[in-house]
Length: 278
Figure (tube, rainbow, N blue to C red):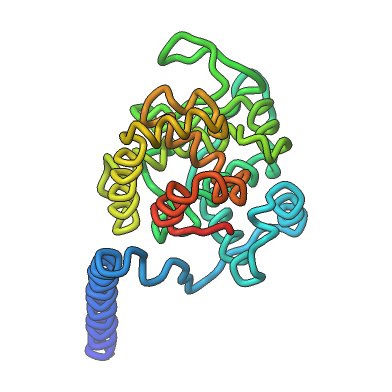
């Protein structure tokens, strides 16, 4: 009897080690394949592959449908991928209330959806560069700058912070190219892709295309054209980081207009985040 138990234990341990080894080699193979594919073809070989897709409750699906045209325009299959990622975001990051604001499931879904939109073309979508989502009811005094903010990405603290009033306004006014959620998450995405090693091949692709963006705006004629159009709001010309955040706001809120007015920049951005809205 003891010999049988010992044999069973040995078999279980052996199978577990074999399974873990196969998983690790498979994971490394996929990573290697992705890096090769991105360098060869300029895009990941695949983005969405989930053994066990998770979902969100029906009322929260309705929130996505009502408030996010990005989600409404997806196919049925890709809507399920989107919801799976929303679920993963909510379970991964901690939400913190400030100044008495009550955080509801609907609020969590809206925050999560804003990040999922930005990273929907990337395989890695749950980075560790932030761990906390902090919500204030209105503008707040930043602990970093001492100034009054509507939102910020605090990299050292691993936190993305929003004034809920202004976050909601960004969603409600969906075609004015001002979206606080997209803006602050764009800063987090930029750091993830250019200053960390957790973005995978998609992060490398983002970084390479960011260099192209900098080259593009470094051309005096292009910069003059951008400024003259008045399409990208003036705040975007503060520095490179704000330019990217403002550009991504416009890319998601008014993609057809973006493509028509800035076709070269539009193409670079579609490659950078591996997503083409129109």
